[in-house]
Length: 115
Length: 109
Image 1 (tube, rainbow over the protein chains, first blue to last red):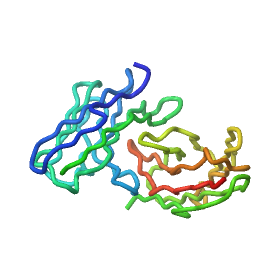
Image 2: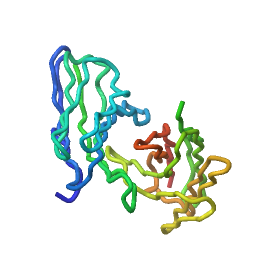
Image 3: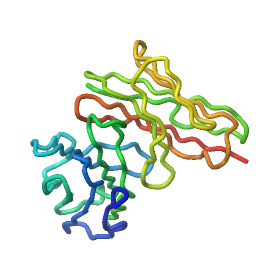
Image 4: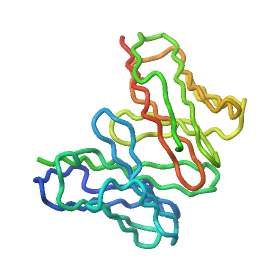
């Protein structure tokens, strides 16, 4: 595809349920990032994947959050036992570290609402 | 701790005004500084800066980096209502990026 895609675009769930958010990066981009953006706030780093290296999970806020990536393609962010404070837009971005532009390309995000 | 600070956090101007947005940073292994515009959900790329003193320009927007003083500015001249957005500054370091909180710009007609 031409850009980063994410699904679903919107997700409403009940407190305590698990949710899965999907990200399809740009083909050939070895790096993939997940961010969270709460209403009115800046981007909060969650996790970073680079090729086959161990992911940088330093931004994950709790053990309810986990993410996986299959090779250099799709990534899934899972939130278990969702809480109301998890309500936010979850943005995925991909990049080609060391490439000519060194730019992150963002997907449209998933708006998660936990009731 | 690696961090990026932006100022002001919020700014209201009228069409035609010129604005300057500031971004300062403290990171190890600096690689690049990027500016994004975020109107709805996904930020869109504006500029990438890696060298000091070289202005990048795109239409009414321009940006410059000072690696000695560790800051960058984003200028918007002759602002329009369509410039209303959050402007994010991000710094690439090592293999990662850190984002500032953003500046919310509102341009009134």
